[in-house]
Structures are given as structure tokens and as C-alpha cells.
Image 1 (cartoon, rainbow, N blue to C red):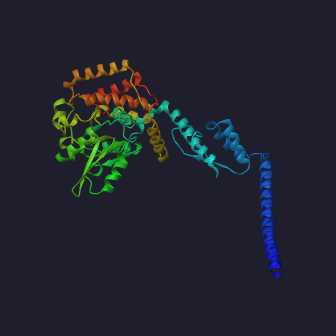
Image 2: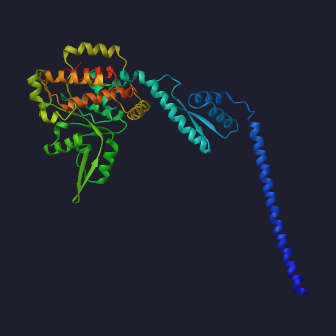
Length: 421
């Protein structure tokens, strides 16, 4: 009988413990339900809250980049203090004030984080489309804005930024600081670039770390090479492999590696004895630091002269009347993003315009003897690639007549080697 009583007591104790657990669980459930109910009541009440003037202004800035449904959802979360909107001002100097305010959504909800990404994409898309109309007029001015003149060179380099195919340009001119300023500016505007002499940019490296850094810097962008006239004969072959075949070879510890890249070369060199005495054809040819075969690997060659008295008055007038384009760091980042965005566009050329390009190339070949440079297939490919770049600069997927006219004008000026205006 005692044994049965012990069993009953054990059962009773287990039942008591279970009852306590059930009671505690019930209390927690009730408490949670009450808390949830309170939160729901609070959230519902907050929906009737009147937005502040600051919040209404923030929503106004957000409205262009979201749908009406998304805007209402953001408005509700804003009222319930489950979301905040921060307005980030970029300070771009070339856009209307107030159009550089990016609404940033701050919330723990994943849906809001995804919406934030779409808002940012839509914001930049609108800013880029606004910039299109002034792109051709403005971007060349942003290339070395402190350097007066050399408009065709700046136009060519501005287009070079937008080419997805390699376009190689070389500036040959009297020893001065203008050429270096141009390359330095171009390297800043390109989304990916490297700047330096041949060995420090595309030359032979001593470690994988250096080669990785170089590839990261210049791939799908510009390789800006200074003082190319100092390149050694054995280094020319490596440079030509980079320009023609778009790869870099690297030897270390009896191992050979090859790295495929996609880079355009922008270089400068001084003439023999650092100066052209005159613009006479024979003098130009005799002062070129490279032979015609090497120069023919470039798509475009410019002769850069010191300012002379014939054009001094004209340049002085430009200084007095023209507004210099001054870029801040935010402007440079905007241009880099604009170039990166535009380079995604695949451009085609209509058959009729293809015939115009062919006829122009033939006319250049017929006048070749009046220029110090040969007209080769690289000349023709450069014209086509820069025409495509011109379309991309204005976010178009088809070449128009004005694109060819821009490039034709640049090539006429370059081949007549009178780019000192």
C-alpha cells in the first residue's frame, strides 16, 4: 500500500511541475500577446500622426524614384518611427542646386534595404540623363581644365574614356608641363586607371602583388604612360603586346604567367632634343622620337606645340572670356560613375554611316603625304571606336552623323599637326 502511495505522490508532483510550466508558458504567451497587441495599437495610432515639415520634404525628394505604393509604405513606416530618411548632398558643381540630394532609407527591414538600392539606381539614372545634353560640351573642358587650348586633344581623350575597345593615343610635344597635366587629369576622370612611366605602370614587375595592383588599376580603363621617349628597345615589344594583343606576360622563379587585360594607352613623349624648331613637315618627321612602324600602333597621334605669338592674343582672349571648369572631388566621382554607366551600352553603326566612315578614311589615305604620320588600319579602327564612344557619351546605342563629324574633325586636326591653338 505504501508503494502505491509513493507512486501517487510522484504523479502528483509531476502534475504540479507540469502545471507550473503550463501556467508560466500561458503567462508568457499572454504577456507577449498583450505586448503585440499594444504594439499593434500603438502602430495603428501612429498612422494618424501628422508628419513634420522635415519629413514631408524628405518624402517629396523621395517621390520621383519610387512608385505610389512604395511611397505610401515608406510614409507609414516613417510615421511609426520604423524608418528614417536621410538626404545626402553631393555638391556637384555642374547640376542645378537641389538636384544633388539623394534620399537614403534607413531601416532594419530587408524590403526597405532592397528599395534603398533601387532608389539609388533611379537617382543616378535621372542625374545621368540630365547630364547627357551637356556631356559633349563639358567633358572635354574637364580634361586638364587649367590647360588653355588643345581642344581637339581634350575632345579625343574625353571620347577615349567611353571606348570599350582599346583606343591608343600619344601626345608628342615640346618639353613642358601641359602633357603631364593632361594625362594626370585623364587618369583621375577614368573609373580605372594607372599613371606613371612605362615601368611603373605596364612594365615588368617583381612580385605578384604589384602585378595584381596594376591590373586592378588599369584594366577596363586607361594606362597613362609618361615620358614614353625613355622606353628601352626591349620594352617596346612588351608595350606593343599590351596595345595589340591586350595581355601582359610575367616571369618569376622560372615560371611564366600571362594576364589578359583590356586597357587603352594614353601616352606622351618629347621629340628629339625636347623641342620642335618649326612645324615644317620635314622638321616634324626628323624630330619624332619613334619610327613610323611604332607610331602606327597608336590610333591617334598629336603634335603638341608651345604657345606661339600667332595664337597668344587669341588664347589671352579665351582666358578673359571663358569660364574655366573647376571640378571638386564629388564632380570627379560623378564623372567616373557616368563613364562606367555609359560603357555598358553596346553601340551599332548604321550602314549609311559606315559608308561615310569608309569614304573619310580613303580621303585621309589620299592626303597621307602631307602628314608626318601614316594612315593605317589602326587609324580607321580608331575613328570607328571613338565614334561609338561619342554615342555612349550621350547614352545612345546607335552612331549618328554628329558622332562621325566630331571624330572626323579631331582626326583632320591631328593629321595636320596644328594642335597648338
